[in-house]
Length: 355
Image (cartoon, rainbow, N blue to C red; front, top):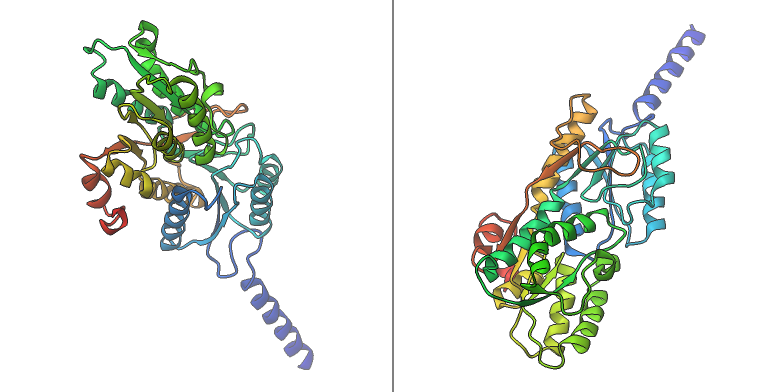
């Protein structure tokens, strides 16, 4: 009888232990676990993306491991590897550098953990299952079309002077942003209606490592001192995002006395939105991270439940190894005329945040 009781107690203890552990995937609570890797806390948009993602995933019943990598590639690699080791069922990764996560992705593939590339395509890996982003080429075309419409290039005589500031060469999106804008403006550049005074008009010439405000500012200061110090007027500075636009705006404030140019941006960061209201920036493409987060949460749920995952593009995003099935959200732009509707009425910001 004692032996039977002992055996029953042992079986019960094993059952308790098995119930309390996460096993090969999931968490100790039994909830599925999602690892979310964001590149940095230094840019407002990634803080918002991370917070939105965590909130949405937790509301959907998932445990969330959210990590920020301080723009350090090795730190992000280590964090993602830890997420895999700690039993995450799905990974959502906004890569610092598109080709830097090979080792971690190999681990994910061996562990059969699906990977969603978030907003930035992960390059040169067949372990990327899906890509969720905004239509990045369209972001650029929205910026370019804004310039066309604001200057009335179809009818105005011109010529107008323009400069470009693009994004980080390590971010696959940066090329889409720049090419989208340049393709809209190219006919006017080729006809001479738009004049790139510095002559810098290829992506490599105008790229901004790390999307750094200080990097963009330094380059803008050099351009202004070299090409505009003699009183030459600047009509447009097309910037791919808000952090680079802020650098250009800082340079203009200290180094330029002509008619203030059209300045584009992207992300509707608070400081840039304040600049739009003050007339220091013309527009910013708004990519509502709440929309993207909601879509990714939906995709995570479809993956975990074994359902068909929603995608709306299976042709555009080739990461060098495979064309990654993608879901593209639609961008819009905000300016001084519509920012209240786009940003405040939607609940994205409060009026106090923009004072």
